[in-house]
Image (cartoon, rainbow, N blue to C red; front, side):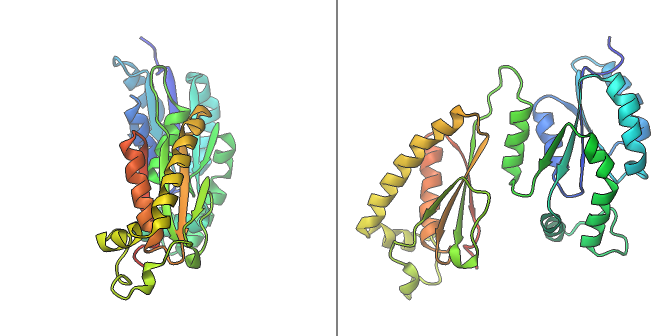
Length: 289
């Protein structure tokens, strides 16, 4: 029996960057994982886990929730972990200050370093404190533009095991050009040429998710012609992207306000792609504005 697991993945990074999602993904791949383990307990934990059968793959989440983590972890990782477990990987998750601040605002969870500091100052203080930890990382992943599903697809791709196949995730994001462009997308389609339901008083308060809006668009000759060509084009491209081992593909569909036309087209495209076996996520960014 080995004294330590054969494979070890240590997950660290900025608070709010997605460490718990990476941990759950590794668990899906058969890793035995522990979250928020104090640095002093990592070595005895690994020895204990290694004594059990089928525990050759271990994942550990460590971060600033542990007292003095930023100062004690770098030397511990260099001097102990890398020597004890040669097949160890250190993942550092990052994200922009703006994205991290928004995530904390949405979840209403306190930042570990916040105390009496504004959230942005706490994020910046953590970023500075973790400079040395980040420099040690084998893999730095910026999660700013990843949805939960995209982050999972990226980790599955990087840690894919023999005999496993992870299908490409297609994310469709509908939006309004007047509310700002999307960024970090692979394909962009502008549907502002379609007649706008906004100018029909009865349809104005509705969205592209409502059957009345869909019925209105389906009566427009250009709608069916366009959608047929769009579906054929995207259906042709997806296998080509998969050949290049792309884990996720983001498609943006925009109209003026992101409420009617883009939503109807995006919803239908996602539904029909899913019916042909693709993994699809649909996000309507501006639908409820």
